[in-house]
Length: 424
Image 1 (cartoon, helix red, strand yellow):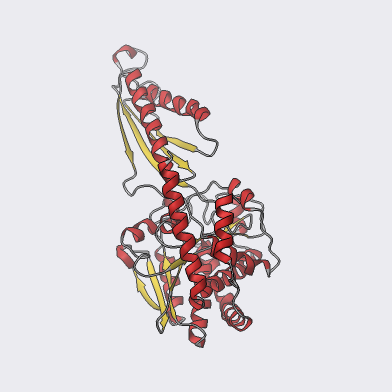
Image 2 (image 1 turned 135 degrees about the vertical axis):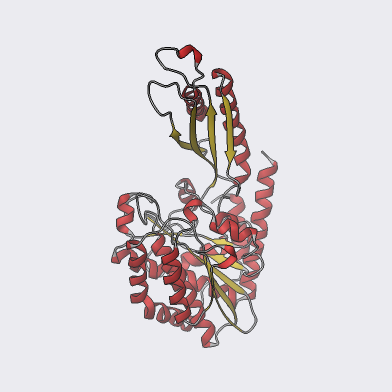
């Protein structure tokens, strides 16, 4: 852990008991255990009937039906998205706890990131908080957000733009299955760009001198980007595919296109890579005589996740009671590399997005991870982690001093983010 974070965490936890009492833990455990079998059926249903981003119609209906049966006030097709929803339960006045559920999958892989498990973790966590509210042990509100198209980094960004989190919850939490247990799971920023080169077609053998080769331009750009990687930070990432390389080998290609992702540890660093990419595109066009057009995605940057130290450590304390042990923060951050639109939420309200192991060594977005996401072991891991996440949210409801510590940590994180941006 770096010195700033270590000091901040010590200050945040000074004089605070981070755990709920045994009676509240018992309420959460009972409520989640009671629905575990039904959650298992839902998880397998979503795994067997995977839908891609913004097309999760079956998942939307299955999840909202379950939540209504559990006594939540459900809003279907929330915030103008056909497959988004919210589910709320409140008792009295108090702080407001948000959870996120994801349920889209990956073309060709299915639930290769375990979003069937993320979906039921959201259900379990929300039900756990609702049970404590119903018991009279706490007052406040719990909201579960059904967030579509995480693999496309769309759903939560739209919700942020419409102030779904900022105006309705004080904190927001979610889980993500992985091969490891990391309460500080490092998730980095991402942007994407589509580039096209336009040349002039001609017969590739009879009159090649009359053509302007758009594929030459694409190859030039590709090679420039490959060489550029040598001068990037070790934590920077650029990767892409050629989506159109021409139509026939005996025709000089008049059009080529490609799709690239760029990633940096902080979203404020993305502009640095954007300029380098654009320079490579322009140089390739100039060298080959082609026209070039590029388009960065309209919805903007998917930001890095800022994990709230206080809530992350509270979650870890509950997980340790189940026998889970966590690597050092330094080790966790070194292992980072994925991206999620939860990052945009984390810049608006205090958030955590822990990774929890599901008894696999496979990386996310692989065939092996898809298989692991439907096992009984993965289900049990999800139930355990959901209880810990629910209890972390309940701590915010119960303890004003604890919530003040959460807010202080969030404010300090924002200051650090601004300072880091100024140094670029």
